[in-house]
Length: 508
Image (cartoon, rainbow, N blue to C red; front, side, top):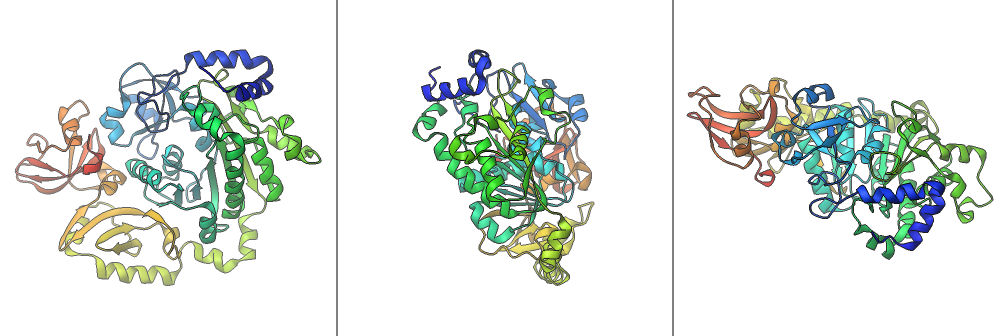
């Protein structure tokens, strides 16, 4: 592989005596079957294919008990596994059921290293195609709020699909600049993840064509963008909140120097050890390199606190770990939630939805809901909170608590909350997103195919199916279609035949 000379000279400076071992690692790399690297894409023909279990649907232990693939654990995250051997994990019904996400193992680090608690308000600022966002949503487990953002509207559409596939409910999917988000959500988030756009040096091994973009733009171009993004993220984070900054590049300019810029332009931040089960060095991660920060960036020099803090960042190299190149640093903003309340108690009190906002929403829901929805709702084992339902042009949405009284008018978004379905006169058509958010036991009326039943694949292709052996021949109406007990989508039963209602845009 021909690597840019400026890049290799920088790697020699970074790695010293390890440079030869790093260069040799390029001999074991590869690229995916379409020549394009990326999370969620068909699995790559290289040494480090990864699969991350959706813990919102089942535990890693439960998945291992039914996994049709050869797996071994990724050490830095409990629900990550190396996918070994042949086979296409993206064409198994379990993938369509949202039981796992295909993700390069090093890319699992950022979401794993950001400690998420149930009820948190979380922002994934550069979220597409959704590898980190789906993990954050799974760990929120239907609580709190996940705002998943990507500036590119087309990429945000892919992000939304992956979140819906995973069964995410309490979401707001936006396509905005960080500056615009800060106008709506200043000081709002408990946790923020920034997997920043970068020069991609850590992916050269996987996708050699990325070197062309590096030669056209390079670290200087991306470093400016990264500094702007992190500066706005500092405004979005509440006092005491945590921010995880990551890239898939080796450049000191894009990594340690970007973190240093944040420490200096947004005083009150400090770097913490990554929130992983063991110390970063346990996995073979290398420490940050404050010693290589340029004189221009360091100014009069680094303070001891800056130097110590930057060393806590983690660098992943493919000759040290079974994964591609990555960088991650965890930071905390000074202050506590109590201090935030003292600064602006009225704003804090209204963040979660006030009595007035909830009452107005309830009145709207009562007026909007059709008989068709009322009839469908009888099959839901767990009733919906009606003051969280909103109707827009006949489409019903189930809003997160945190958005009930928050004004987001003017914000460019693709989804608020869980899309329930569409009212068509007195009929109600449930959505694919609702099917994925349910569990089998949540709906009174299911068709459950064993994974080895060829009808599971035929369902995913959009075919009408004979299901007399799985359903009462006299039964009719909506059925939640499952594979081994995990929802895939909807069907309509009549006379032992299942009319396929799997979302056309997702069909195989």
